[in-house]
Length: 158
Image (cartoon, rainbow, N blue to C red; front, side):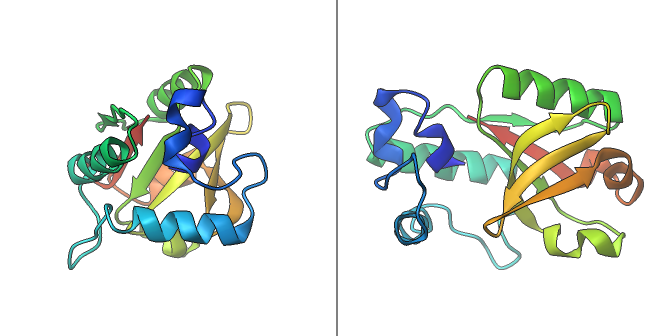
């Protein structure tokens, strides 16, 4: 999320010390080691969007970049999620999503995990996410069907 946001304009370049055009693995690991000093999970992970936003702000302050994370909760339907994601991505924002609990085993790797939302396909009803160094497609209806979205899905944007 921060590496992508660093490309936004020259004033944010301090967020990522590596080459933001190539994102090579060596630079990215070094970057994530630096970020982990700020974004510190508790005993049950990092489940609070407020804490996540606060950690991002602290990291930005020390990198001499002012970050204003915005938290979005309470999206319960496909149109609400699509409208929000579409608006954030069209504004060029970097968007993270947390899925706390999901009953569908297809989401096992995404439970209790923050990931980048990188694209929205409203015709297919899916979102592209980036995590674990890979790109995945998430079906929005399936996402909503296996959890209580008001409790278990959170977004933070920069």
